[in-house]
Length: 269
Image (tube, rainbow, N blue to C red; front, side):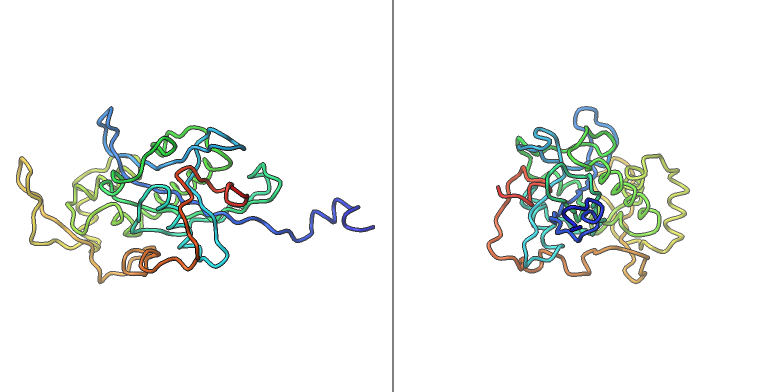
């Protein structure tokens, strides 16, 4: 009996899966309507074709045959939002056999990016691109809710042992600003005195001789990260080559538009 006549044997045949690249982009933003404390937000794109037409999805783009994965992630991110984040890291490969309703199997290589709030404010926001609070998302297309949940878990886990908070801050910052980043990501208030003791005792930050100006009270001191300490699993921060340091290797790269999402990329436009 041939494999075509035997469903069980056919199920174990090697298959060619379509590869997609998507990016979860996190930034700290304050709700303009409520004026609440900063929260973790991310941009989503509205799907304009089936399946899941009208639903929001993560930004995605095509993986060209001669293009490295980091360049594809950075390029499609920029095509969708205009952002060029300093922190871009591969998150996970999502390949559940039921994740796409398309006839072809789709495996998505997902990256996550972190941007400062001032950078996020310059992001392209059109009819089909909108920012959402990460903890209050609508039902997204495909398995993108699961992907965002996993990315949030990774962000909160890394906040405990790496200098990942640096990606949300400038070169210098106050301890209060650093604490606000931790509070926004972890979703809970931190005792200011305990936080100061912990951070200063860790040796991961260095006090500068500069102070934050323009405050009503005594100007707080500015700090910077201690570059001499190699923290565990720092991620590809600026000391490493960023995908935008050189042009992508793919030829004929063009913007995919502000409404692309991962499963579009395996099919003709």
